[in-house]
Structures are given as C-alpha cells and as structure tokens.
Length: 367
Image (cartoon, rainbow, N blue to C red):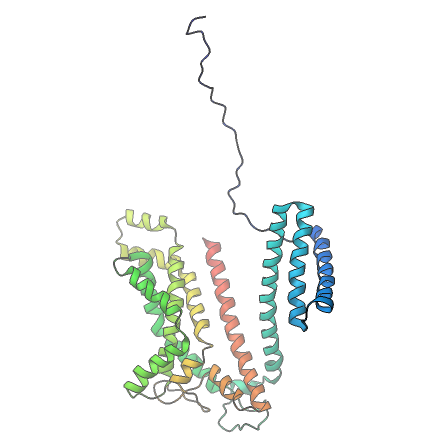
C-alpha cells in the first residue's frame, strides 16, 4: 500500500452537534405542591424538637427563644429530608428557597403590621375638618376629632416643593454629566453623590441651621426646611436619574450622532425624552425620601400650630412635625390625633411609591 493510499492519521472532524444551552440565569425553585408535605412534616418535627429542648434540656424560656429554636430545628430537619428525597444539591436549593421565603415573609409581615396599626389608630379619628382646620384653638385636652392639620399639610407641600425646585435641576445636571458627558470630575462627583446618600438627615438640618439660620440670621422658615430637604433629595434623584439615562439604548445616540447632531442636542432631544418616565420615577422617589423627615424640619422650620403661607418668614409646620409634637403631649387625644396625621402621611408616601412603580413599569414595558 502506498503512502497516498494509507488512511490519514488526522482524525476526522465530527459533525457539529446542536447543543441547546440554556443561558437564562438560574433561579431558586418555587415551593411547589409536592413539597408541602415535606415542609409540614419538618415543621411538626421541629416543634417536637423545640419542646424537648426547652422543656428538658436548655434553661431558656419565652416566645423569642421558642421561635428561634423551632426555626433552626426546622431548617436542619428540612435540609435532611430534602437531601434524602431529592439529593444533596436539590436539598441545598430547597433550603435556600425556604430561607429566602422566610425572610421575605418576615419583611412583608412587619410592613403590614405597621401599616395595619397606623390605619387602625388613625383612620377612625379622621374627619373632614382635619383637612380644613388648624390647631389654633385646639388644646391638649380637646377630643381627637377636633382640630386639624391643614397648616401642616400646606407646610409639607411648600417645603417639599421648595426642595424639588432646588434639587431637581442640580440632580438632573449631575446625572447627565455622569452618564452622558464624563471627564476628569466624574469620579469626584460620583464620590460626592454616594457620600451624600449616607448623610443622616439631622446633619443636613444642622448644616442649614448653622449656615442659613444662625450665620445669615434669617430665622426659622419653610424655605430653610426646603433647603435641608433638597440636600436629602439630591442624591436619590441624581442616582436614580443616572441609572434611567443609562437604560436608553446606545443605538439612539449613535444614530443621532451619525446624522450630524451635536452631543448636547442628542441628549436634549433624544436621551431625556426617551427616559422621561424614569426621570419622573426618580422625582417621586426623591419626594418619598424627604417627605417623612422630622429632624431637619425641626431644626429649620421649628413648627407652628397656626397657618403660615409665607415660607420665607416665620416658623412653619409640616406633617412629621405635627405628629412629633402631638405625641410629646402624652395625652390620649393628641396621640390619637398624631396617628391621624401619620395615616395621612402614610397614604401620601404610599401613593408616591405606587406611582413610581407604575411609571417605572410602563417605562420598562415600552423599552
């Protein structure tokens, strides 16, 4: 056999195999119906272990200790049962699912408990006069249904409005610079925004008090409270707006630049209108961040029991201060009135957050 007739030692290339590779991110399994029996069995077994440990072995008592021991015993037993039935890897997966569900239910339960208690204490005393009267002629011994918080509602609207007027332009300019322009100051500006996100609210109020009220001798006012609230709004609006601007597809920018449009016109006419819904979401989140603050407003607006429609002169009240001052009277009627104010404030904040979620969801659906 000649060399040409010999079979080649080079292995033949195998035909390509069509392998279906799932690139989707792995997620924890949901708790399905067939796992209910395992969960219930593990829960009852953990209850028996908890009784044995508390009644016979451990010198501990009380509901917190009982719940903690039961939960730890439940996780250990369920991990063993799931591993025996479905394998070690599946057991770890199901254990992680149960832990995450547990903490999620704890958070939701705590939130519902707070909301339910405020609704229970505040909605019962809510009357129309709360939106039409002030506390000018209402004493600490008056019934909770007398008097109102009109002066606090007006003050809240004015102070938050002033904060928005100051914070929104600065936040949008900062977000546009960080997401669209960049440069040498990008890292310092980003660092400042991140640092401002962690500033305690009372520090913002103290800063305005020292610089504006004490040094400039302007006195307490709603405008000073708006300045303090703008410091709290600025990082929230700036960071959220920056993320929303980054979600705009680069194809829009590239197409506009290819047609000869300058960068500033691309940002103004293409990027910002496309991210309009997200920017509104950022604004609402900024409002929700600042509307419930008490310490900075106490240091800057001081609070009042009468109406003050001039935010540039004189003390002014808002809903958080209304709640704070009513609770400090330590009487049943003022405390009930404080819960009514808390209920109104809670409804306002919930409306703001729900609006932000709805607007953000519509923006993602359109993209």
